[in-house]
Length: 223
Ligand SMILES: Nc1ncnc2c1ncn2[C@@H]1O[C@H](COP(=O)(O)OP(=O)(O)OP(=O)(O)O)[C@@H](O)[C@H]1O
Ligand SMILES: [Mg+2]
Image 1 (tube, rainbow, N blue to C red):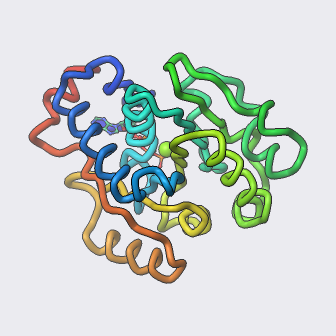
Image 2: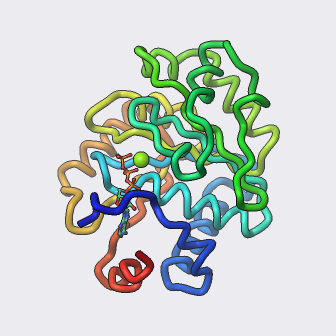
């Protein structure tokens, strides 16, 4: 059922008065408090496995921040299966990978979106060595630059268990949020992710329960 839906919906923009949007606003408030009221700015969003709602969460959370007047940027750090370019219909050849390969400047890859206060940094061309690219100094500099220009930097990541990338990114961000898909993500997988985050000293801010039964019918109505 979930895989049949192509693009994550802009629930927080299109249905601002829905329960789902209210929950994203609560998440926004919680994250803001956990990030020390704006003194920390970069948040990686990930999940244990593929298809658990990372991109959906990043997009709707980012819209919620932007609608609250915060200058927000979404970074597509899923250099293996990127999707942010599709969501916002922006070019996919230039992006984070070209920036990290030092072939492009930040201004050339930052894209304004249709939503006020919201920018996107697409992944760019899929590189051969995503983990190496993400672990280098250019990624630190990229995050630093984004933090100096934006109020909030949200990083869409690949899943934690199959590849190392998210652990690298989580270690470089001020905080990390773990998305859990109701009825699918196993407790064992969540424990494993928590252990791995402890090892890399990631600052786990909390978990987001996606697809909770109570709200499902409303969510599905939107499609
Ligand atoms: N709560 C939900 N209810 C219904 N559909 C959902 C929900 N959350 C996500 N989806 C849909 O499920 C699919 C996968 O979601 P999404 O792309 O956000 O997951 P992901 O974790 O980013 O996946 P990947 O690991 O492939 O990057 C999408 O088509 C999305 O629209
Ligand atoms: Mg995704």
